[in-house]
Image 1 (cartoon, one colour):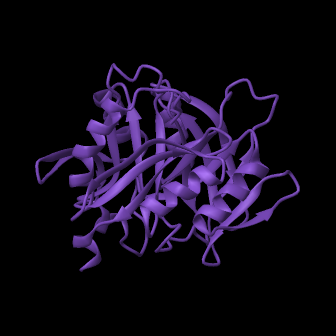
Image 2 (image 1 turned 90 degrees about the vertical axis):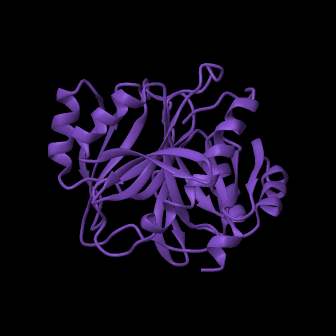
Length: 288
C-alpha cells in the first residue's frame, strides 16, 4: 500500500476506529500453528529505494536481525527465525517507483495461481522462482494494481514468531472489494466474510472457515492512497514505538487509534517511504 507523504487522516482514522474493535476477533485464527491454509499471511519483503536506511530503522524499532546479501538486500530474522527480507528498488524497474511492503500469502500451487491470475487479467511481475529451501514464489498485481507475493512453501517455512517485532496480520486496501473478493477466490482459494464485534464491522478473506487477512475499502476522500497490501507488526508499547519511529527518521501517518480491551493501532512510514501498521495487543487478549 502506498500513501503520499501528505494525506488527510480523518477518514482513515474513522475506518480504523471501527476495525480495531473487530480485529482481535480474527487474530487468534491467524496465529494458529501447523500447516498454513491457503491465504495465510506468511511474511513480507520490503522493496526499498534505500535498503540500508530501512534496515537500520527496522532493526532498531523491532529488534530484527539483518543479514546483508551480495545484491545489497537483507534477510530479516526475528528471534533467530527467518521472517522476510528487504530488497533494493532497482533504478531500471519501470513498474515500481516508490518503496512498499510486498505481503506474502500461502498458495497451494504457485504455477496454477499464476496461470489463473493471468487468465483473470492480473499483471505478472515475477514468474516462479525457487529460493533455497523456502519454497517457490511469484509476484502479481491484482486488477486494482495491488502487488502481492504468492508463496508455495518449501521444506523450510518463514517462521511465525511472537512478541514485539513479530508479524501479526495483513490487510488489503482496495477500491473495489467485490472484484478483489472474486479475484482472490479464484487465484488463492479464499472466501469473503464480514466480522462484527462490539459494533465494529470488518471484512476478511477466509479459508477453512477461519479469517486469514483483512480488507479495507479505500474511501473516495483518500484519493492519494493506491490499492495495496499492508502488514501489521506487533509492538509491546505503541506509544514508545511511535516516539522511536520519529527519532529514527520515520513518520507517523496517523497515530494511536485505541480500544483498550482490544488493542491500539497506528500507521507509520519508514525513512524510504514504505508504510505498515504497528499494533499493541489489548488488555482482553493479554489476559487470555
